[in-house]
Amino acid sequence: MKVFKRVRGIVNANLHAKLDKMEDPEKMIRLMLTEMDETLIEAKSSTAERMANRALILEEIKEAKELKGRWEKRSELAVDKERDDLAREAILEKGRINRRLEALNEELKQIDFIIASMDEQIAKLEAKREEVRDKQRILIQRALHAQEKKKVVEALRAIDSSLPYRRFSELEEKIERLEAEAEMADFSPSATKEKEFAKLESDSEVEAELAKLKAQRKG
Image (cartoon, rainbow, N blue to C red; front, side, top):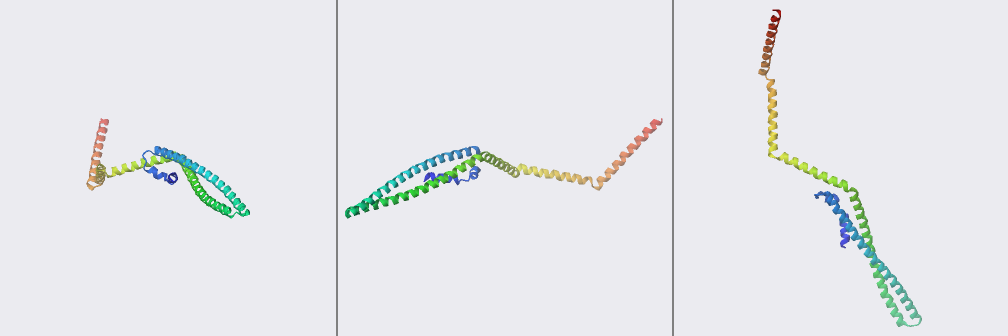
């Protein structure tokens, strides 16, 4: 049955798997809810039709049982009246009605199974619909977050693998090496002596200037 398979398919659907490929999570969830509502209407309508068929079968079973009882009485009456020919006819008719009753009872059994299965699937679909509605906002936020995170990761991967970024990294490494070499140069023996002589010269100039200032003050 088409409706039955459709209900079962929606109930068994993995919502998160559907969200993975969507471009507009909110739109996708709205469409999903609309599909669920339409399927529920169709499934309930189909179940109502089968309930109506069940009522007709029950009515036929009731009529067949009444008719069977009537032919039983007729067969008994025919036997009492020593009309074996009529008794045989009544017994044959009762057998035909009895076979009809067996077929109707089997049909009732099958339609009861279908209705019970439909009711179960409808209940599951209604529960799934309520779950989607309850989680609608958080599912949309999670889907959007996942999409944005994926974009950022892909952008970072693209930058890391790009030629300009690799050249930038190489330049950064060269600058770091130059800075390290400059720091090492400050600690070389020649650089240390140069600093010592520069200090001596600076001290001599200061002392000369001080002596000159003292002489001027005394004069």
